[in-house]
Image 1 (cartoon, rainbow, N blue to C red):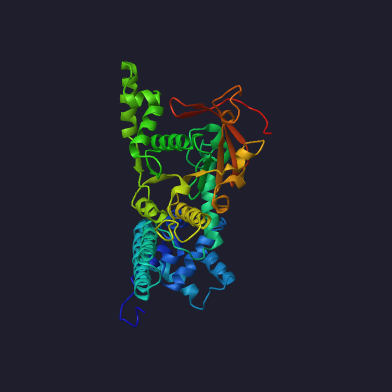
Image 2: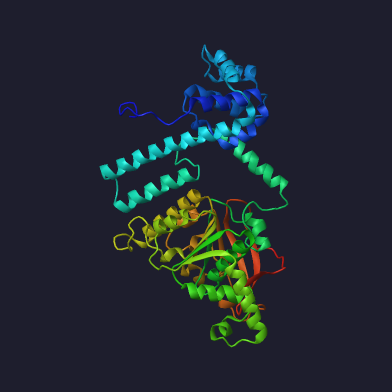
Length: 447
């Protein structure tokens, strides 16, 4: 297309050659280079073949020099008659490997311009060809541009060698860290150790019957992440107002009775604690949207504009409108709508590469069994939720069904699904006056 229109694709053959010449002259710079550019950033096919070969050799700990690279290119079937001469020319053309990162920056910038031009052409084609509604085209356009800004590809096959290197780097970082979890801490040690924290790209579900405390638990986790990371936590509440949520946050942070906080009938000491809690919460970057007609599309659009997003909290799934239509469930069953929403939120988690913590109602089925503890099949209105979710935890409070229990405020946090580990039950102590949960130091076998 560019050739037909007389346009030249943005690329710098000189910069591409300088990057390759640098890694051949000084293989010590390879780790820095592969962190700055990838094979697709090279426009000239011969340069791309060389870089892919070097990348694969480095991933497997093999020696990189002109002789070994040439031999490996023969094995991979990308060797040509002039390849040997071209490798020597690359080394001769490169004045020094000291400036390799400047060369790499030029290669990456040109690749970004090419990708942006391609995305623009695809967006234009969607608009002119009428592929979907205007909101759907706008969503697709935002997703493409957002992926480019994050240095990601939208779809496409990735060589396993590339993924292997990323995984090894992640495992090495985990080994060097004192942390026993791979994601963000929930503030509940036993839960963290079970699910390895809240991990980027995961859809995590907190499920419960009404009134058990799922909103309070989600707010506690949001508060913990906001304070611990200093990054942005986005809270979308379709049921409660901003003011109601902040009252709960203040009550928990200050350790003050929530009802008394609402009336303002507090002692001087409690006022001091509330003032300090308000200062602490104000220092975090927790943002709240209480739009009751929210769709996943609108939620995704807001989250893409946040530069340092750590966590997304949604309260709760069954109140959301179907993102496919942008309207209520007028022409579709609730099961189909919730399935659509569940899938869209999993896609959003992967796209943003942050954990999405979503609350969900449980059906009445659990209340009709002798053992009231929730099961995975109790997720209300859609089996798609249990399929899309990476982690599902359910809250159970026996006191609701049996007021004569020994500890009325004991809550079981039952891990029903866990793609990162085992299924187990974590015991919590509910503090209703502070809307807070604490881990109970209690060990007993699951029934």
